[in-house]
Image 1: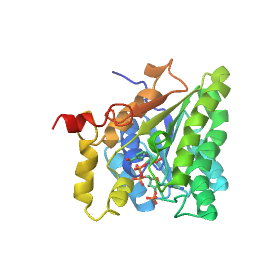
Image 2: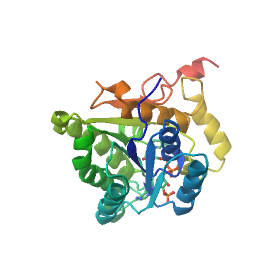
Image 3: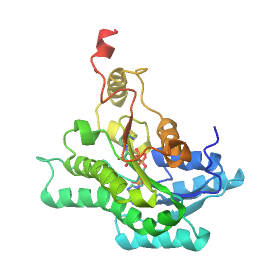
Length: 264
Ligand code: NAP
């Protein structure tokens, strides 16, 4: 299926690692031009070199996104280089474990700020160009917005707000033919996820326990499976889908998790 993403300029925040990296690779494979915007300098350069060596076009912009000025500068850089923006994947985020009891108000505010504000800032600065290209926005949220996780109030609040903003922006941008959707992953092995897993005494056992609870296939979702959904949402193949929260998780959030136990 041709997704018609050829030569489309698509910004992927946090596009050098994990889910973002898979989306960057997917856009490049479809002949589009991914623009990585994130702070992972070495990983961004390595990925860019690899893609360029294989004949793909990609732009790597190293920015810390928690600064509004940086978000504005990143969008300006894309415009100076390509003169157009066809899509925005808001993806960068960190599950930073600021709890209700074990966190404090300063950490909570900081966590919401670093996980949420750049989703708005990037979308805000991209809008004039997305209006011209009738492009679209995909927000990567998290199952924590729906199920909770415990000990991560700031991250969960930011992820919930991203789902609300997906609906809010889908409505506001209807008249410009800009679609806005969210993907809700649950358990995807990425550098971020591995870091979290390593906080447990026995990460391998913990991983097996989690996988057992994923109804479809008793396995984690791959970053590529999230990326494939993002590519579909970016493409005109999803031309009548807007304001949706697409849960890509092997049924983890919505199916009966005790099914895996029953199947034993
Ligand atoms: P990852 O492996 O850590 O990759 C995220 C990338 O974004 C990293 O390069 C990270 O840099 C960068 N980044 C984060 N915050 C940034 C900021 N403020 N400014 C610039 N760059 C920033 O994470 P991932 O697991 O792929 O997660 C991607 C998205 O999926 C996140 O929004 C996350 O909430 C969501 N998600 C993931 C899972 C999962 O199971 N993995 C589940 C649900 C939702 P650093 O490495 O320096 O932080």
